[in-house]
Length: 260
Image (tube, rainbow, N blue to C red; front, side, top):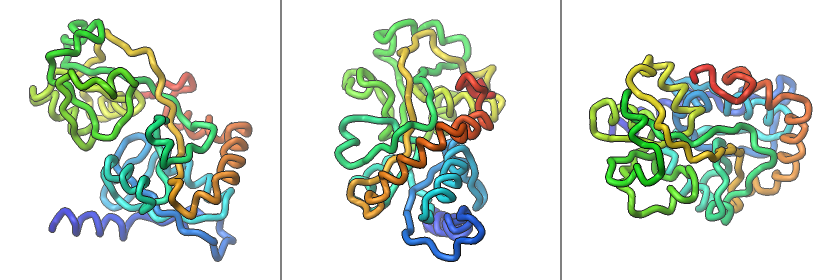
């Protein structure tokens, strides 16, 4: 009950997209319901406030396309389910996967790029040099996240799923995991922010893939009628340097975070 009340309190305090709209807009034609979770630096939800790269992106979109946003705190995996059911309209931070395209329309172009990385306690990174070295280890991941196909479909690994990367960090520090997987953009930021770069390191093995992040719209939402306008504006934002500027405010130009 306390958790439910806390979520409602956060929702009441979070600014809606009316706050994002340009000043002279008295009305907007469509309310977009978007789930939001804490995933720094993309989404930072704390003490009834929110900020981050994805929020900056949405601010630009709502200024250029006439809609407003209502953010609802929600775990990542549940957000995907509700996208599939058409109970929420859109999400940010989406990796593109064929199974998701059945119910998500990915707005082109993507707005950020990360890499998949495995993390171990300090001094253990070189013990994982190949994919095979992951076998037999307690391996943490976030429910509903897409990393790379071989890993996502592998049922032989000792995977332990949790709700957030923050939980993975706590578990590996407590000795409850041997290794966990994450996107470097987010995890590296967390490690620097928490002063943990001397306690957790990257494994020697790198999948060598990139994770491109998209803004996506549920195919079962009335907001789906906006996808052409959204793609037109997203392309404009890429061409005029807006997307690059937003990313560089959180990451260095090469796409590496200032926490890496």
